[in-house]
Image 1 (cartoon, one colour):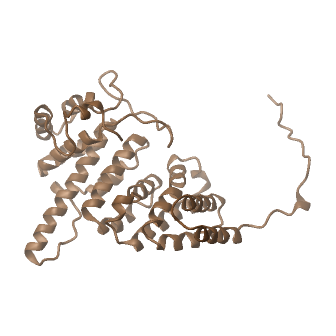
Image 2 (cartoon, one colour):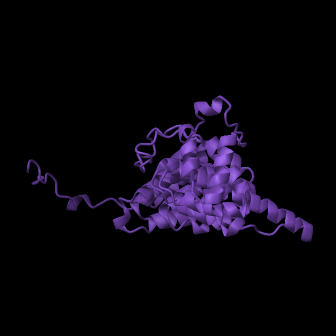
Image 3 (tube, rainbow, N blue to C red):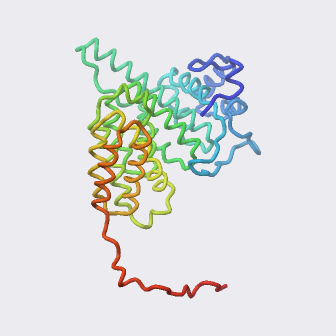
Length: 330
């Protein structure tokens, strides 16, 4: 997501909310638990298409390669941080944003949840340092909200612009909390869209430099691959399953660049029997080949995949020249 012209004019610098009208609208929204006035104020700077008839109907997901609106993510982050700073009284507003049908409301909600998680982490670390020098594991947020759980619900939204906002928010949570979050993402890898978002959030090179939990990363990959590999045939047309399979090859290649154990895991997956799963492995090997991996390593992986390929059909049992009787029927 890129900045809009409003951002370039300096109306809302990244990471800080400098607009008193928006700040006052946030305060009223927190008191009322109703985001309507706030969303109307944010509408022109959101970067999303203008409202029609006073509301924005949910738009269709146009696929992974379709052009997206230039969503003002910096504004959403600033508003989310300002909401989180209100503490427990803002819980009702955050829940209202999470239940909205509007894309930008959900993007703002995701950033607010990320900010709540960051504040809870800092509070827990300060408390732990004061007591024993060992920070406790921060899980919930202010006011009883579970930021990671709420983000997991938002990750199931079928619209890519919303999912991208959740990915950005989850990356902020991972940056704030580190390796502990990677383990907690096991609750995300039992659903197609959630698993895709979890892996997409992890597969960011700058973020990965601050992580050391390679075993947990492999565990999340294994869980995501397993739900794809074992999915019922009835799910083949589901958006989430398609997206998960499309995204995994590039995600695997990025994660493998940080954690060598991912390469060993991928070699084990070369024994997969399902054609769709084998295709994921083949595309992941191709992505590794395009990256910084040596030809010797990628050739070894390709050979392992070829060695487990199913035998070709017996050519003597293939009936040649069979006429397609349905051709020309109306």
